[in-house]
Length: 173
Image (cartoon, rainbow, N blue to C red; front, top):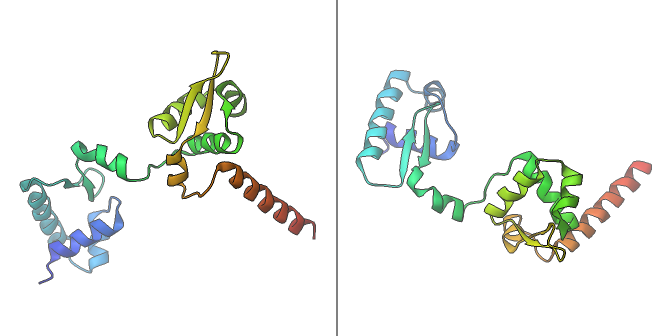
């Protein structure tokens, strides 16, 4: 039997973001009071069982993995990267291996924090260069897996250069 609680649970699962009481009421075509009562029951259901999921109600309602299981989420799911970190990663991928000092000249002083985050996420590795003064940075197999790349990044560079050439020629015509 389909219940209001199960329909709310489906909405929270599918949206995968915090949704307000009003949004849920509109989506389901139900009265706000009925939604609120069912959500409270659903929150109690989740907190009463010893599961990995919970409904958080801080900024709307969201179905999420409990904090104590976040290590599994980070291990198994792709990680969102902030735009600056993603730009730093793209420079590394296109110019690898690249010395950290050269990368800093290209990307600025935030580079050190970006590289540290990328190393922690396993997307790049850093090793001391032969002089021992800087680090060489390059992508890891996890990087290729994360972006679903086959082959090495040199082939990616060739593809991007070919694509740029095609676009440049199209603009000229």
